[in-house]
Image 1 (cartoon, rainbow, N blue to C red):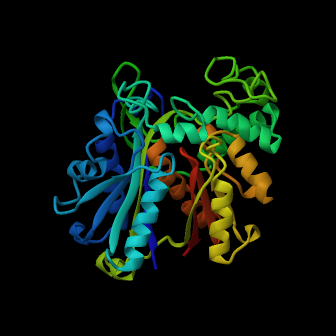
Image 2: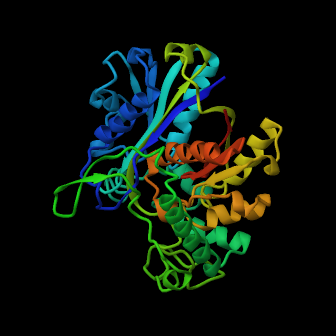
Image 3: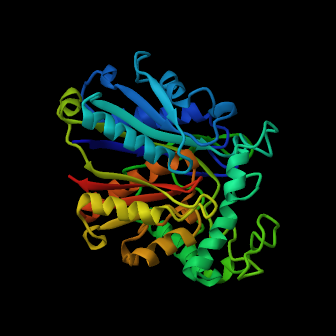
Length: 402
């Protein structure tokens, strides 16, 4: 079996906030070291067979194999531990978990750290692609002929198309986003994130040292009315108007927040548990699945990925106690919920990326940390996580609490 032994994440920092001056590899090392501290005992850190880290914008401080750089920045891991970096867009660290689980399930490796990091304040989204780099279009002529010419496929236009496809209104998204903030604020007040968050050194606006131990983007008291005053991305010229709604519906308020952060998961098989000192794991990775869908629509793949993972697991939606579906845009979990007839009381119960941020490469491991710990808090058995990804793909993972 593939066990999730321990989890750790930083609190998300908002753009140009407390984590904005942190080097991505050093930030990743902080959660890796905390992860190992949480195991306890006196195991040899050299038993870690690999470190797999997800990063999306692999340029500047996030280039040159961040996974290995995390090891070099770690105070706990010896130089004998290798590291590698994976990019499956917003699901990168969920894919890191999949690779780690596959490694220990096969017996090729026994102990693997899966995680991710993104400091978007330093490395803005799309900074490693056209038009910012000036080094050419990642979409070849063949792709442009097949799907239509564009400098890059727009997630914002895709979100508007999702609204059209599933009949989702601006009001419905603003209501969902306000709920995300309310749920996140309630979770903080109740201490629900305390067991997963690793406090780290950060900086205030003047550059002074501050302690960062709470998610920075939550707007306590945000209302549907306040969110309704925000201009749409269509009005701001970010994306063209969809045929059915000239005003557009997507705003900064009902989309995920640009943020900074890191997260990691310690994954092991039975032999790995013994190497770690017979530690008791938190959960096991039950079933893994992937799906591809329309790359122009881009955001719909969590739906077939969820159908696929449930079929492989022999489970139904009603068997799942908690769902984590990334709030890249509010329309993504809303359309997922409508398509699969999901129970809204089980979905993103502690808020999501509209309130808690979406540090791209870290989000998969971040959400899994929250999912596993919430299963323990509530006594639930199964949790399901799905994330939409650039290029029209999605990871789906079912975990079982132990």
